Length: 636
Image (cartoon, rainbow, N blue to C red; front, side, top):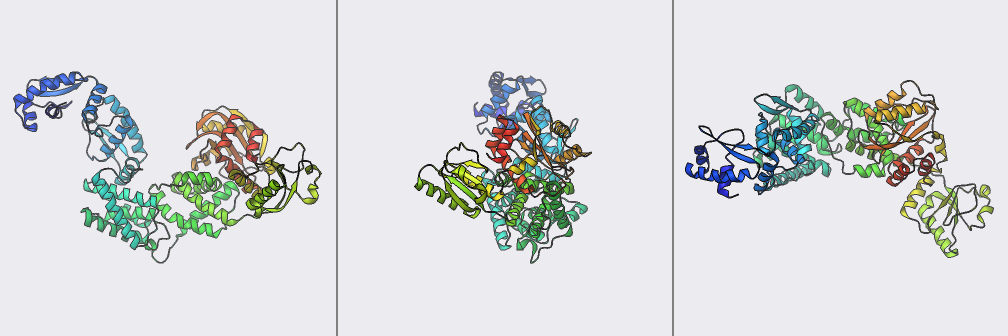
């Protein structure tokens, strides 16, 4: 379309008439020229799903006959392409941004015209927008003759903007935005360096995002205005040094960007600083860190939850308790005010420290009860790191093993084989005996106290100890596997105390998580005496925090130890179902005994190894039998 015709087109509306005189004044041409160009435009519109309506005494307006065809035409005319969203997802993002950044009511017809879509399409897009807004405690109000408007607290609007519109793209596009983000980065870096702040890279980036959002809101006259009661609540939550830091940052922003931060904005910034700066930062807390009795009590509740659910007692681990206390100081702010903190190591933590992550998830049920909201996976991941460190430092008492190695490649290869084993497993091995496939059955296994046999070839004889077939040159996977074997001091025979063929369902049909758990509890009740309220306790634990950690597995259990006997009720579903955070198809319902259990940590370690082993889970789903489950658990 020619620029001259386009200028006329841009003055027309679908809802309001405009006269040729008004168009002429807007584009600085004569009315005669306007009428001449309107005839050309009319032909163009007819070919693309619209027509020009002329009404005497009123002027001209657009009538859209085919919204989709006309929308495509509009996008084609828009050379920049980004001004008119084309997909439903792009429109939802646009609508979210548009509505959050406009304090006044907006008419639906105006939005339809702005996006070149029908009212029905707009209504469908707004449903998703409304769902997003509700998750941030915001409401999309509709008023007849006025339109629609987002209502809610300014704090919640900013959270929504930061998380939904700027997430993953903090270094925003556009020259002006890039300049401002670089300036904010420089301000934070300089003040942080002077104050000796400890701030992770992800926390640093999120802080810039929240300040950028605040700057934009203040500039548009949508600044933060906290009531006195809210101010006092925030003041109680923030740490002593945060307010002074916020004042310094606000002062630099005003000096360099001419944006003034009032008292409420400074408190808002201080709140984000308190939730993101590490608790061992000298500039944040001064010379001493004071941990409140409330935080310490909450940590004790976390460790008690771990013991209550998993029979793992870490309550007297003072170092872990202090680490959790320090971590909970900024976490308290994030959970109180629903301030997310991305964990870039989350998937790695879940994969490499699955046991610690499971324990952390149990600990976080205490936080869920305290704050009245589920703890995000990212935060569980941070807490899992603390538990992983504590479990490592706890140390393992390793009983050295006597092993036999069988290699048929000759004495030289055999000596190399033994040398490699000493190199990989020296700390776990007491003695290594060399044998051939012909001599091995005559060995005095009892007298030599042999624990395991490792062979590079299949053996036709039955031996009184576990036999492992391995490659001549150890792979990383084999080294990892056998280190765990030596550390546990068990080939998994103790698992028979937990798993029972009678407590296995190979193809369970169910339509919901609740139905799965009901069926499994009913089945388990045929073989074990379940106390009253066991099923209800399992559901309550589901409400307190996730038991599905990915890889199609869930490990539900009651809120506390309730049964006299320990057991695992296992079921493979006929199809994956949504469990709350992930799809699930293999369910291991755990019930622990009230009696002391020396094998509990080994039990959880083996179970969490299965959770993080994608290949093993696929094999289980392909062959859903009890024998296969035990083989995979024992890594046979």
